Image 1 (cartoon, rainbow, N blue to C red):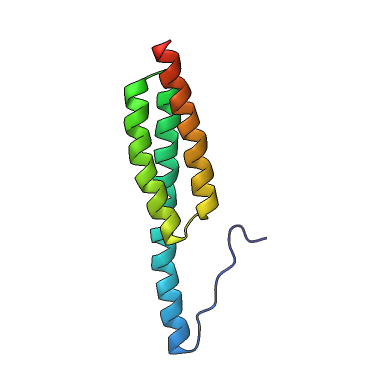
Image 2: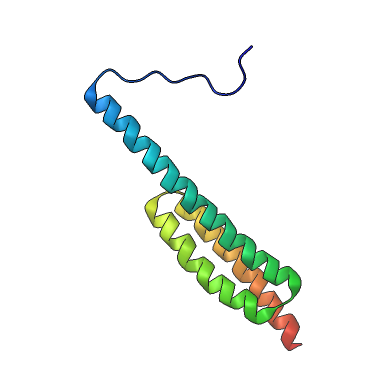
Length: 101
């Protein structure tokens, strides 16, 4: 039995071949942006767990721009982006109030 993905057939039409080439490039770009999104979110969560208020707030500011950009491009749904921002914002705010108290 063969392991891995089945081999894809090459399209016959020129437009299909071009579409296949474009799909490879778009897939690579989207994968890179998805990774950037997840890394930005992870950095904020790490800073919150560490209890570093300044690092968490600066990472959150960077994460907001990354999340908004990726939501605008349609890689993740806008509601998912808003949900992630909201949850992380709440975590950063509780960290700030704990540090003040």
